[in-house]
Image (tube, rainbow, N blue to C red; front, side, top):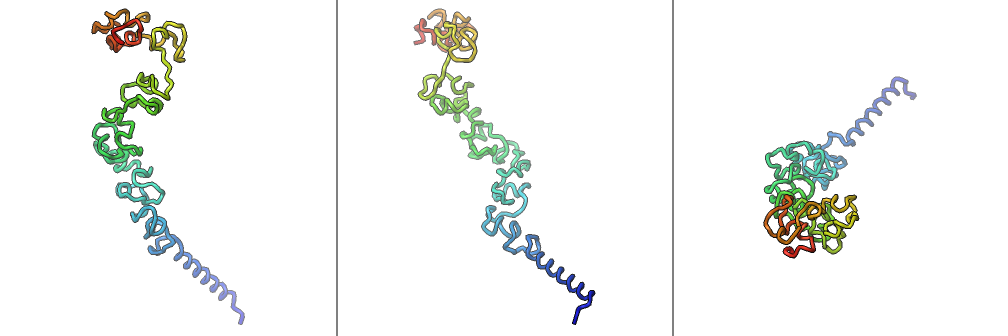
Length: 248
């Protein structure tokens, strides 16, 4: 028996609704918390063995999620290593010292001895160059090839790499200075810094450039004769002058 037009339309509508209902039960929505095909609902990230390790799935942008030790949003970054946590108190160093926040500073003696990566840069205590400047025990000699080529003031004396005279005779490091009496009188730019002889600050200590080192007496009188804060043999005008014998 042929179906009437109205009956056919009713059956067609019923079929469409049935298909839609079936699809809703198979999607990744909230209708079935135990649906194993879902990610982030009733499971740890991608399935029960997801990288968040059993944490609460969802955004990683609040105090709880940013301090629970889990990768809540399953993006490969946990807590303060996730940029979404950057402005939370847990990661912004909102506490007084920043200790343990993972987003504060690592620039005090206390923070440089607490065994934590306070500023979240993956370097802890003396391995963090921020600590080299503030904690004497973190300062390392600048007298080897690695230290003289790393761009850091390892010994905290204000001079970096070849600007630090400790690097002068280090094997594997080529440092050129304009620092001897001969260099400072030869009218040559020996160190290639565009300054020659007395126009080069390296030469300022020599007596012919207005510095100290006119005689053994001047280099052993305990007086800062040229007022450059360096006295006697601590002044390169004395220590680097071959005519001065008291500094050898």
